[in-house]
Length: 182
Image (cartoon, rainbow, N blue to C red; front, side, top):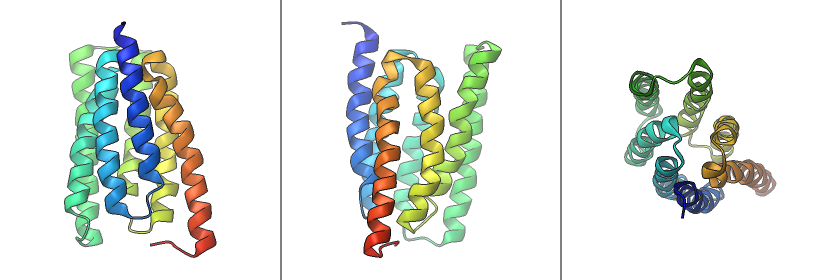
């Protein structure tokens, strides 16, 4: 079996976990499922050759665990964590550029999920699940573009982002209809 197929299977598992995560009504459940999904996505990029995906998902594992720990902390403390994670994302990008020396086009493609990561990380600062999902959709769009560029090895990630966006829209509609925000 080709390496890309292993990557596809792993990303499909990550896709299912992420879809379940963003349908969660509680942030803690969302973060736990998202942590597991992130691990599968990181491994999928190892098999599919998606270099920046590996680096960012390593940061995202730390991000998810950090926000789990900071869940009951003040908004100011969660914002400080946001800045630390964003600096880590920039550091991961710089490390990727230094070690892999990608072409200018690949460097720009790899910058897209870094920008999305700023939004995805800020989403986890939120306590309101509707706001969290709205902000996280920007991150999903960036990964949709990046995974489309990576190719078949990131198929689960690509499809997952399509389903995540649809699922987040559905969950926002559901929560608004039921009057649930927080």
